[in-house]
Length: 275
Ligand code: AMP
Image (tube, rainbow, N blue to C red; front, side, top):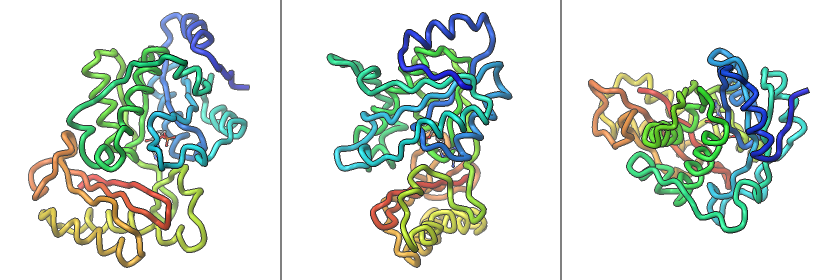
């Protein structure tokens, strides 16, 4: 049985008893899939004890986003955590994380500005705030995040560096379904032919990755062609520097990343690959 904690005091009294054992932290919003479990298994390679958090963080959702309908299954999630070697799960209520009078937020500047930051105002402020709180509470040696949310990973690396939190941030490659669709808790929203149409994101990215093309506009056109063919509405398609996330006009001679966000029906999905 994995332990389940609901309050910061319980977490603190537990982590204080670890006596120098290395601790890995895997923050999630629950509705766990194999991508999350890969983070937990990787955590076990970096530490003696792996902890996970399950918290649907209200401050990272916009007013018209899916906070109330976000999938929740705490019992199922705790069983999955246990199967992936997690020793304890922190699953606080929103009022515990954001009690009355809460007024301190973390803003990461440049790397959070464009892409998701532009399309989802306030999103990274919510992410950065909750991740900073979790890192401050757990004081882990290592924390693991997925490249699936590539910009989020860069935002978290920036805050850990700038706030000198003394934690190693480890990114792991995106875990995909057999046909290439990036695993996501939001895939559960896909109805009817949307599951098939959602493949346009990974297909377009794969086309860009294998095209032997350096011109960013031509790479973007390859991705857009797949989105259009599947009637997936583009939110953005960008070719960026892999570290700064600044847009590139060509990818030659530097590490670059292609990122895409699109709506399949009403479901917004994101994906990215290295170029
Ligand atoms: P979420 O529950 O969506 O907030 O995600 C929690 C963590 O799991 C984040 O670090 C995500 O980047 C990571 N993650 C989500 N989906 C995947 C995936 N398909 N492969 C790898 N990591 C993932």
